[in-house]
Amino acid sequence: MPYQTVNPFNNQLINEYTPHTDQQVEQALAKADALYHSGWAKGDIDQRLPVLHKLADLMESRVEELATIASQEMGKLIAQSRGEVKLCAQIARYYADNAKKFLAPVRYESSLGEAWVEHHPIGVLMAVEPWNFPFYQLMRVLAPNLAAGNPVLVKHAGIVPHCAQAFEQLVAEAGAPQGAYTNLFISQQQVANIIADDRVQGVALTGSEKAGSIVASQAAKALKKSTLELGGNDVFVVLDDSDIARAAKIGAQARLSNAGQVCTAAKRFIVQEKVAEPFLQAFTEHFRAVKIGDPLDETTTLGPLSSREALEGLAKQVDAAVQNGAKLHYGGKPIPHDGNFFEPTILTHISRDNPAYFEEFFGPVAQIYVVKDDDEIVKLANDSHYGLGGAIFSTDIERAKKLASRIETGMVYINSLTDTAPELPFGGVKRSGFGRELSDLGIKEFVNQKLVVVS
Ligand code: NDP
Image (cartoon, rainbow, N blue to C red; front, side, top):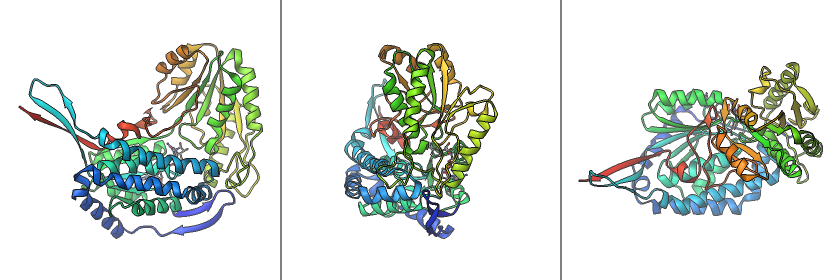
């Protein structure tokens, strides 16, 4: 895929970026590997953490500039882009403040003697990242691994090269030594070559199931650890004792934020029969109220999809869902516009033999399922190849907690949409991937947890 900035609001080409040659890739690998073997990576963590503090400060001082780059490049609403940049600063600061504690030796009681586990970096990592949160996805990998001492090479998505370059420049400006973080405009074959290289010790990917399966196989073939954060088909459960107005408002936000292009977006709304009608009515009103427009316009509430291909793919999925018996309750079509706009859409009556039942819709398309009781909710929620996040709305917290523990996902939020914060682990099960990012768990994914015993 070429590395190009095309504004999704009007499909105008803004800039093209020159791909890196194999020779440049070799230089990047050599620099990263040299850094790994240096005192900077293997020595005291206190040398590395100031880079993260400085990076946090830099991002906070440039929120507007960075947010504008993201909005122009992948269509995120400007207010959401600002939020993403601020969240990145929080993640950098979180690891700057806590990594030392997370990586401190852990003592074990043992009959064999005095024992502890130390945490050491493992080497160069290859990260493959998507466009939907073009800064946050990068920071989730960089911050813990810079603290741990693992140099990171990154292949960002082809449609967000400006974000990729801006982030690399920020990390350098924050004082990271050469090789600590390198952005590469490279092909899939070059990614495969890097993964096979002996100097690389781990692979992290966020993206589609297809990309995850290919890249994780390459890592497995070379016997390297990988973490995968893939798609999701998250449920948003509305129990009959919920605050319906609030559930409808947050549900609409959970489906439409980032034009629906969020792995943890609420995609399947499971509503109890007793409240189905008032919920659907209130929910539809929120969909009706959206204002489509330029993501840089503060009054816009639904931006374009990230690319023309994404729009065409979503339109096909919705058409297929309807051909297979789903009812179009609201929306359902691309909007005639130079940009990649799709109507906010609500589908009902989706049977299990409809392909839509198992598919992830990466856009503003909600599916509504009406159910009788808690057992039916659990059965439907778990009848998915995915297992990323989920939300449950209820005024009976004990009931919601019981349901939460029965849902097969990596995350469940009660009375909130599935969210993210630096201190909370993020990741899934089943075909949503494996491994965790953020929190104390995220920083332990690519470290050597080395046991030392003194007898
Ligand atoms: P992809 O998985 O195709 O892209 C994600 C990243 O993987 C990009 O950097 C892409 O590069 C790269 N990539 C893709 N295939 C390979 C490969 N064989 N080897 C190396 N790198 C590869 O996602 P899409 O952008 O096509 O989005 C499609 C679907 O992916 C969505 O519908 C959604 O299900 C899922 N997705 C999930 C996200 C999440 O947050 N979990 C985020 C984005 C997408 P390039 O751009 O150059 O192709």
